[in-house]
Image (cartoon, rainbow, N blue to C red; front, side):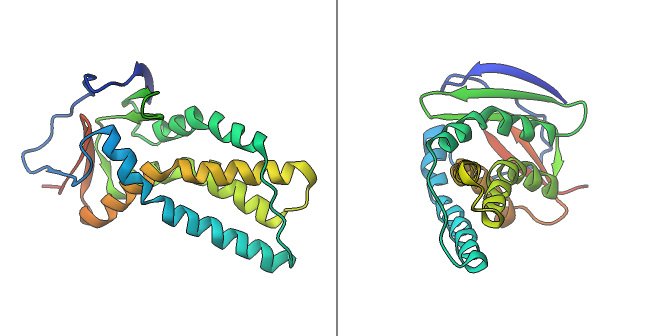
Length: 198
């Protein structure tokens, strides 16, 4: 994987395009970054449900609620934004070119790559950073909620990071609903496509 930092993304930015087979089907998905942000908000609901379940399990395990919001944990979550995208990049096929962009206006960063991937790999690529920076820290807090300052720091980092993945959850939801088993997924321009093997 070769990571290429492309800088700021605007509405005039031309993203890399793939040579897609004639049978490729475009995802039913948002057309602009603004629409992505709006659509992704709905996926804050399952993220909140995961957080509530973990908080509930922590209460069941320890018999008391021990979450303290930590402002340094919020700062740490923001510092995971670029590592988050780097983990996405690592999940793309070997020897592929991965391009990284950011948009201050839309408060987002993202990577794209035109290499084809299996449906399963695309889902793993989408979820892995959220598992590492969101789910795992929250599970750590659930098991060890009373390690003084560190517990609230790690728990807050995980909680905030969990919500940073809403756009990724949207991609996973679209893939699960729209892409048949055994199909290939591929990014081209601003959109995702799928097609079946010949």
